[in-house]
Length: 146
Image (cartoon, rainbow, N blue to C red; front, side, top):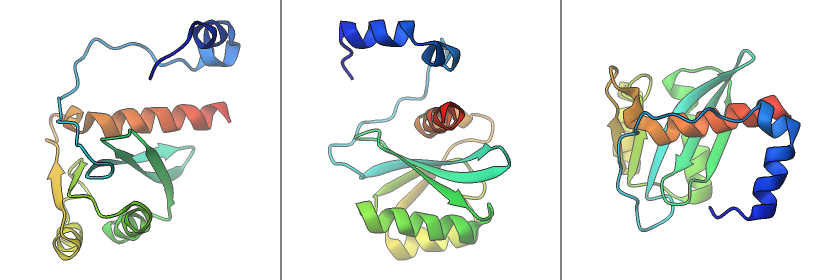
């Protein structure tokens, strides 16, 4: 994303922008190849905000973020929301996600039936799903500002 001098000046002068600005981190995220097609590879994670759970899905190509409110965090609810997302944008070849609940039997059956691969990050290294983690942060920041 290219920022112009006007945009930079405006965000530097904006109180709300400064209040909610993300801290800059020196920790590197795990590298993933950027796909050549939109929605070929997506990341997913669960976000919690003020007692409400959301499924956050991010496209690795365009960085487009979708956030869907969850009734609960079980596999059935997540599969339902993923079906909604896939019906709008197409079925990805790869879904990158944290382990639970994305490595459940129900999720594996869904992936097999809909013909996509689930790549789970290590429970000891959640940064393997760094793009989805970043999308969750952006989504929560937007909710705080609204």
